[in-house]
Image (cartoon, rainbow, N blue to C red; front, side, top):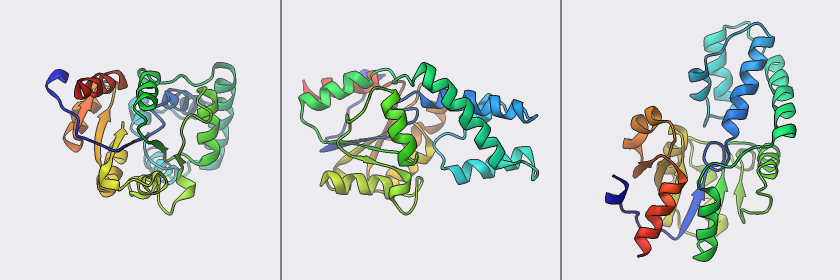
Length: 226
């Protein structure tokens, strides 16, 4: 029960982007499936959903493992990128439920916050812009700005450094196993926000708590302040 949960004290909040702040994963999944079909492959949606949270190199390894050594990664990603740009330029990228409410509370309480993503800066900036979140995050750390991406702790540690907050005083919001592992490696507590019940149940033991949406996190934060 959400009402029985209690948030720990924290001095700063660090958020993932894909699948946590923005519903970008839906757009990626659609683009990858269309690209695969165009190249004569079929990719299961469940397989694609499990790719999220991993950096590009890991994604390629998983694609090769299922599509075989003849898989043309360069052609695939060029085709997927074309489908992705066509979709987002016409439809944008929706924000996940509860994001606006969380940003409002962060401003009201003057809580430092940052975005830490496994996406490279170019894609992060584009996604944030298409989600109408330009200049919303005072700190944005991307995969290409650090030595290693998640599951290594680099993006979270760099976010804490820029916020000038000790890592152990930061709370991370994540939606993937990779992100939770990175948060633990950084010495930070993490809350899992995952709308898929199967993943939420699978990953709940790797997080401080597991919630269906950001709306539930905001509710808990309000309760903690009462």
